[in-house]
Image (cartoon, rainbow over all chains, first blue to last red):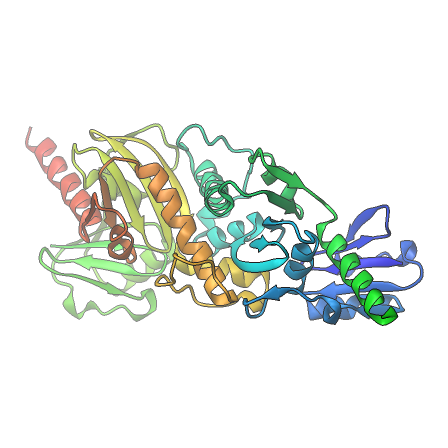
Length: 213
Length: 213
């Protein structure tokens, strides 16, 4: 069994022991075997996967998360379900950075920030003078003294301060491409590359349980 | 005499008593009279003005600001010069939000954040599901419970927290399209629509003084 999390920029696969990612336009199906269960936030990328491999099953309808939030993305749902009944803040740092607060299995609410790539797009949309890659290793100890640093400082500081405020003294569970890096700023952080997949596994196990009874 | 601050999205004019703005592609020259002195961060919009009206003089070379910052935008320079010898933080909240720290006439360093329009572009660049206008009146008292609120909360909270951290207990001088609104969050804030123009006036006066002596 293969699990797949179809995002806006990448598809992430998990075969129970290893995680790997593919660009949507460079799908390598040689490592895929047997049934593939997926969730998707990108209809376009979902179509590319379905064309490239089968059998594929969309398991969005199996993800049951108690929440008053309308329109919670299926990837955020899966990451939150990955916590089981634990409480804390779930941060999925990819194209967007989602910050969701969980209280004993119940989703309390959440915030969205641009991912660092999207910050670059934001600055670029203002002026080509502001078109610099975001360097997340920029020093936060001193006020920037050039434009490239000023942009990177602005993006990194924004993300860290919002995370600090929302996390407070709660546990923080990080996942996603920039998750490991961002987790390093928080002593109570746990980085879990598999959080979304564990949420999917949890949902599948629950469904099998329901079918038995 | 007319002063003009040519930005990336608008041209702002000042005739000594009134400020008004024009879109670059809908320049109304009926209110312009006599010499026009300008600064510009947009070569494209600068060209449109020069074609539409003369005599126009670019006074960038008159703006002398002591700073170790490389490549400080001429509009940020002007806003900082608008402080004279006062110390504090200068926030120009337009297409981008610039945050510059001034210590008795000397520029210490600065940070750039996306303006709220650029935040919208950032989210939109990730997915069309995230294409919502930023509502800066979003409540910050409760965690968002839908996507539109989650995006607006993320953008507004990011900007406010970075400003809070950099301003600390210093005086804060706000200008630009969102300056008045952002100033309302800070008890020690002063909103001055004319800050950039006062910096330009200061530079012109200084030059006249130098010519006399």
